[in-house]
Image 1 (cartoon, rainbow, N blue to C red):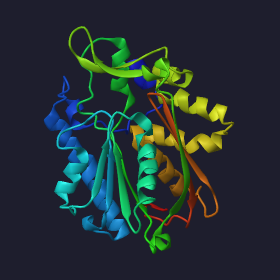
Image 2 (cartoon, rainbow, N blue to C red):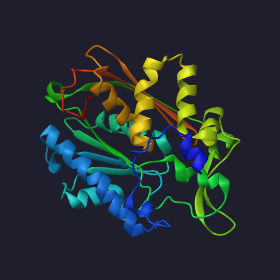
Image 3 (tube, rainbow, N blue to C red):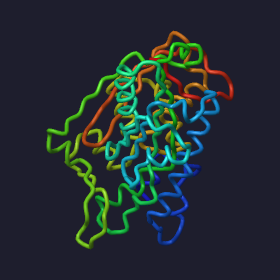
Length: 306
């Protein structure tokens, strides 16, 4: 594990939840719920504050988290906490891997196409407190090193006045998945080991890009994708620096990378931004967005106009 962490490209300032600082870790449901409150409530409140919206203004809520699926659902927890209206359309996506946030954007877009004059919020995170593997099987220990805490909140709207305040216009999205291929399907599988400990097995027989992730985590994968897409070091800077500073937050990493680009003033009106989400299973989704205005200092809000 120490070799994987050292070569992962993730810096010393990345974050683990409190449950994983105990020796041994305490991956309990109670700790996981505390982490939910810690990562989802602040980003949702921050989004509402920056968009001058109230919880009752949200018509559609999509929450994605791959490894933690409580009852009531994560979307129900948000609705209960903020006393949202009864006709809010809520969805919780689980088990969708690192591409889940981009998948949720595609889902929100499709729902908004059938509902006029609506606001949709996507909340993306990965809860780590219950994902810790306590056994000794090497294929499952990889996951203990992969992810860090993080979350993101995104507002999409098709309201008439949304364009005035939107930072981006969502042009199109495209989804591809290869779950019909057994090698892709079994690339990452949650199961028990011979001692009864539950963990995610990462198979070496998976796709080449994912195999590189197994050997030394996400840094080689980023370089592999950059090489295949013929991207230079300047194009890869935002992904590499985000990985080093904040680590791999699974699905919400997309928005950390975009925020880094905004902070460096690398996104300007008239540019086209291509977001590529890759997830186990194996899934890939492309999201193409067009900046509507230049990012303002101190304003980190992700608002789309459909």
